[in-house]
Image 1 (spheres, rainbow, N blue to C red):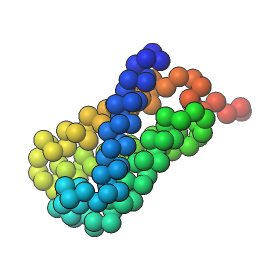
Image 2 (cartoon, rainbow, N blue to C red):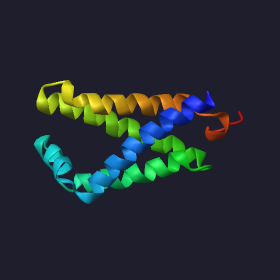
Image 3 (cartoon, rainbow, N blue to C red):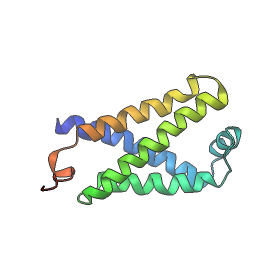
Length: 123
């Protein structure tokens, strides 16, 4: 299970990290895609910053509570991207990369080793 976790986490992390760098750099395809879907261009900077921070949080040891937030953020960003592509473009095809990335993120979350999860709270 540990190997499967790291495989999907590295794949998801690489996609999100490179995407975040593209967002931060204001890459033309990123800005064009966002504005085409009705988002302001500066939205790329916000998304890029949080994607990079989230990836670092997930792959580095410790910070288990923050990891939960990072995974939640990835879920919101990627499910929003899927919805935005489908609604704005009327096609599922452009949503496939975000759907694949979301699948990898969910697999990473559910395959996490116990030391990377929050300890159950005592009641």
